[in-house]
Amino acid sequence: MISIPYLICSILSFVPAIVLHEAAHGFAAWRLGDPTAKRAGRLSMNPLKHIDPFGTVIMPFLLMAMNMPAFGYAKPVPYNPAYFKDPRKGDLIVGLAGPAANLALAVLGAAVHAIVSWTMPAYLLVENDLLYYAIVLFLPLFSLINLYLAFFNLLPVPPLDGSSIFAFFLPAKYLPKYYKVQRYAMPVFLVAVVLVPYVLRVNPVGVYLDVTADNVFDLLFSFGG
Image (cartoon, rainbow, N blue to C red; front, side, top):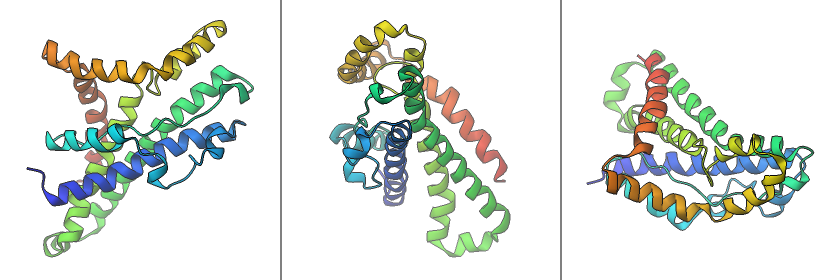
């Protein structure tokens, strides 16, 4: 059973995480000379501009129902590498902009938590439920969700952002075909993510996130006392 405070904190963490993630992609592309995302309205902070029915709504709620941190994905931001002076380098920068935004948000959440932990009298947390949930539940969950989004998207497989790392080292003549493959990779990837843990009884993505996101989370929140 999902508690109401946990549900509220998860939504308040997940929505800005995916919005800023996608907006960061669009902003990076725009700064590199590509107006595609801006013309499509994807530089907006309006969550409705970025929602994907499965990745933004269904998947996070399924994870929360299983008592796991809510993470997922939004509609991919459109961009055209042809606008970039160096398509390979531009693709890499745009791809890494989203995870970088999530890492920055995770560090910000941990920093606020540490500052409040050092300066706020403990009795205030006991006497004020809102403060208690904000400090003890929201800030850690906010950072953890952002870390999950960052490291999940850094997996070097299409259509995740980490695939731009692979594309960076791919010979230029193969890039057009590679970009076409990326458009249809999401269904295949989702099937693999769901079926592999079910068939093998091992969740490689979960193990990867334990090693990366969870360990970084422990490091960040070790300063909060």
